[in-house]
Amino acid sequence: MSASLTAHSQEKKQIRTSQGRQRSLPATLASLSFTDNDYLDLSRHPRVAEAAIGAIRKSGSGARAARHLGGPCPEHQSLEKSLADWKGTEAALVFASGYQTPLGIIPSLVGTKDTVLLERNAHACLFDGARLSQARLRLFARNDPNSLEEALTSNQKLNPEGRVLIVAESLHSMDGDWVELSRLIDLKNRFGAWLLLDEAHANGITGSQGAGWAAEQGLAGQVDVQMGTLGKALGSSGGFVAASASVIDHFLNEARTFLFSTAPAPAAMAAASEALRLVRSSEGDRLRERLGQNIRLFSTALPSFQSGPIQPRVLKSNAAVIQARDFLRARGIEIAAIRPPTVPEGSARLRLSLSARHSEEDIRKLIVALAELPSV
Ligand SMILES: Cc1ncc(COP(=O)(O)O)c(C=O)c1O
Image (tube, rainbow, N blue to C red; front, side, top):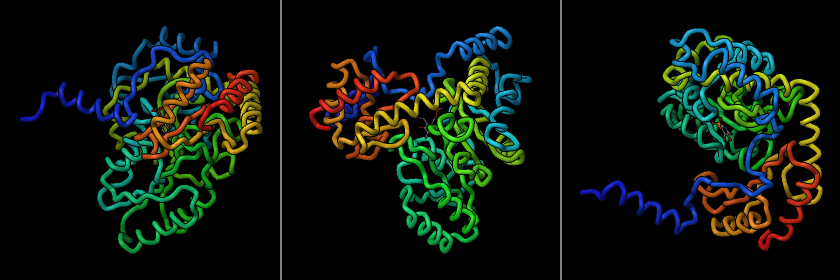
């Protein structure tokens, strides 16, 4: 007979605790926080909040049903139109979260006869979407020009008839580096593969009007599916894809996390629409400039760090990361202690997330505290 569920859970907790992997939800954060992804500080912007309140008054607190059943959703439709315009695509579709987006779209594109080529350290939702599709999963090393080519070549020999979907993040969520997109696109064109680019962390912060890394590189038109979340620089919640009208119609009919989930709340959609208006305006430019100043100040003092807002400091062991987090917390600074399974074993790290919200003084305080950190 198996142990009771409570006993099983307690045993698992003991194992996690001994490995430095036990998590709990924080009751409070230190006053100066570098843990969130609100890169442009829009989640508390008065115009964004007002838009959300207005949508609740007009359309109610919930969407009442999945999109096919719940009647017209003006906030969703209007946001989708703006997202498509921003991304330069014919259409866009919103999902209840960024996490649910690849869980719906990847299995709608590929199946048992096909292959997903995924970056080795990609976000969990991209892995989970690929696994759910039951396609062959091959991993490649990010920004290694040979690794993807080798995977494509060997896959072509093994499975010449199957479809191939390449999946990559533009700004990596944990490493903070930018993908070499032109190389990915060359290879996808050469091998006749499709490309899904997750711009979760890049949307809003780079490219003209903050339209993301593919836009910044002038390559957006060559990405088959541009994916994003509304929960980071857009300060709201939900996920989205932007693509041709036919591809979006395909997702609308085939993506199960779209079909079988209540549509996101109208307030979240209206908030994201208003945030997107700000992102595309001169205020968006001003906020990106503020964020850029913070990144420059930070990386001038600590040049080994990345050039974007996500600044990892790999300390390897879980215990060292927890110790470092507690050291900084005691100095009034909150930093995320990232451990497996979020990152691979042996690569636990501090993840600092810079925002336009931070003042110069905040960044200087962070630099001083990091310099005092015993193991950094
Ligand atoms: C690269 C990447 N993709 C997707 C997601 C999921 O987005 P959401 O938080 O909206 O579920 C995240 C969130 O952390 C992410 O980092």
